[in-house]
Amino acid sequence: MKNSFTLTGLVLGSLIVGCVSKPVPPPPPPPLPPVVTPASLESIRNAYMKANPNDKVGLVTQVLESDLFAAVGEVNSKDFAEGSILTFVDADGGFVAHGVVIKSLESEVHVKFDVAGGRAPRVGDLAIRFENRAVPAPK
Image: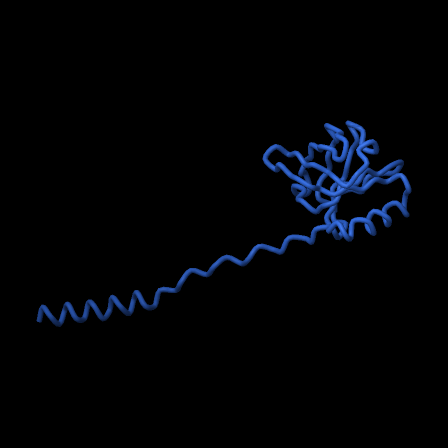
């Protein structure tokens, strides 16, 4: 009799364990937006300059997200005075963040950015200094 209770318990236990559903894995994160390649930078820069010849476009080359700093290269740093306000956009022109130039070096500028309404810039995003017109508001 003891063996039949043990056998019945093992059978019921295995049925219960076998019927427990496995946890559903979380959905994958959305894909990151594309980044600007050096090859496409020139055509993007030309498009912005066609709209306004005084707009200046650079490429994010480094990001210290924890300190909210980004380095912007592929620019004539003389066009980015300290205190200039920049808008960061992705390769599709979508708003990323705003920032302020805190240091202008020979071939790059350092920018303190604010992620309010967007995200931290990443390598391959664009930094734009709009001249003599309103900066586009975040979408």
